[in-house]
Amino acid sequence: MSTGSYDILQYLVDRAHIHDTITNLASLLNCRDWNGLAERVFASDEVAIDFKQIYGGEVYKAPGAAQADAWKAWTESLTSCQLVTAGILADLPQPGDNVAPPQTVKASANVISTNRRDSAMGDNTMHYGAVYTYELTREVSGSANPWRIMYLHADLIWIKGNREVVKDIA
Image 1: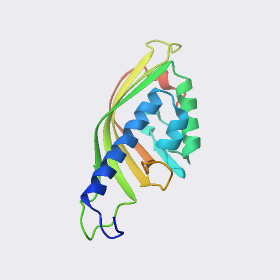
Image 2: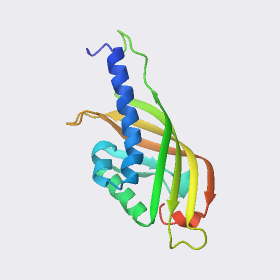
Image 3: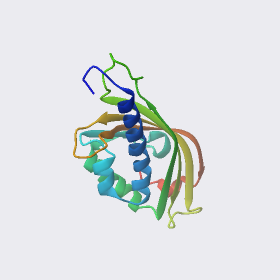
């Protein structure tokens, strides 16, 4: 692949890698694999997470490893959580001779999350559905998959249950 040519093979590989990175966010969170989040999902430089519509608070910005540590701290207050991601769409340029390989890309996915805290007052669960919008960057690393999340924004569609379950997450 030359600098000025983005061929169909690289397009398909990029699409698969972006899909894997976004899927790994949910999978590694569900398994509580914080090192995996830091190494295979989050960009090494600053990562911005915007969950204001769901949890309140502000956009949280930190390097990838610190972001994974924050997610660990947030989820340790919960008895359990599960994130399900579907319908991942990557906004890649169409391949062509005069098209440079992208270094950043936007993507989106539908997400359903269940959070449970047995010590919560009242109902012990909160569920939500959202559309997550991602910005990913191509990082040079020892990994076969170079795509990492540098920005994540949640657009809340619906929420059900007890918000007290996630009161300490923001």
